[in-house]
Image (cartoon, rainbow, N blue to C red):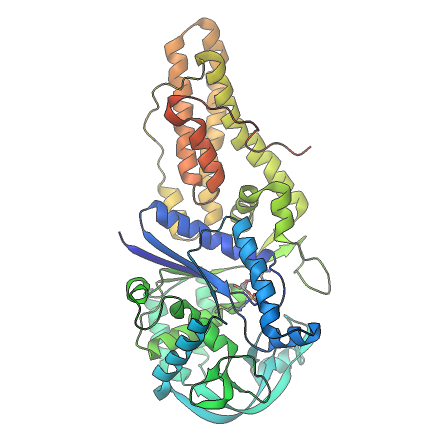
Length: 477
Ligand code: MSP
């Protein structure tokens, strides 16, 4: 079996999880389940990013210790993963001692590319990111993502010689060896590299921030949160000596959001090249999910708790909404009205209805006996191609062609008339063909809606119809 390693980014735990986190978990889970379906030996890792000023600030605001804050919030992330039926194999916290120790090992192995220098720069704690003077001017001194003024930091830091690797990073992206998807995001990354890469600060003085991993050999500094957080993708595999690391690195797919593409498409590859490691095979950069057409923000107070959506519509319906109605290559929108419309029209009226009609007819005309189910007959090339390119929306459009196809087929064939005319054999052929199509649809839905897929399979198991106690997707009136 071929190995397959997939990761999500690791969210900050200064607050509880939001819709954007749910979107990323679901995307990665679809890909992990799809790979398992193709007999790949999957390792799917996610986790939490727990150091840095953002966390330290929040903890002090609440009057608790950083670790108390991160432990409480990490728990909420784990709960959400369960609620979304995410099949991750690992959950790494950057406060895990194993991560801390291995991050120090990485630092040591990078020594020839690390140097110390006096530095003055503009920083946003919300982003945990340094920005250039020009950019600060363009934004009139305030971070557009966090609506807070940039702070000027003047300190002695360790630097990583990222600039040395510009050419190699660019070449790997250009050649497709390190595939950045979609093209629009790849082009943004390439133009960033073309503008010229500077070496980056990778530490902070403890005197200013002590919530982090100590720099080996220098007790006065901690590692910059982004630097050590990126390392989670290899520390979780037991870099450098563990067999998991040897078996699973390089990652097959890394899933991240558009605001952190620079870290994953430029800085991370730079670190890997400096360590003499291979780059991930694919980086899929997704867009942002907004609420009612507006960016989620604290000041608007329009953030939606993903748990509430699952409580109302169920896990699979929410997964379906994210995968089909948030454009896979673009930003998208959540609203309660939109999910209700998708639920009623597509899940209840189309998919649910196709299943319940077939079940009812087999019950009525054939005493629950399914008959001989024909082999799957649909061409799923477009579906597979869509998934290979992270077009979840497109893949589900394909599945829905088939769902609509069954309903239309039933409408045209009118099995109830055939039953009236007494042509039992023809009737059985039609109904078992429908069952064949539903089972094929169930297979295609496994990555997206695992429970629904299983329910459809169970309904027609062993050639007999097992009636469900409730409709697959009871309608909301
Ligand atoms: N801690 C860093 C990631 C470190 S990875 C080594 C971080 N955390 S985050 O909590 O701010 O974001 C986690 C993920 O959620 C990122 O991929 C980010 O793009 C994504 N999203 C945050 N808000 C989002 C939306 N509104 N919509 C979709 N995804 C968004 O960045």
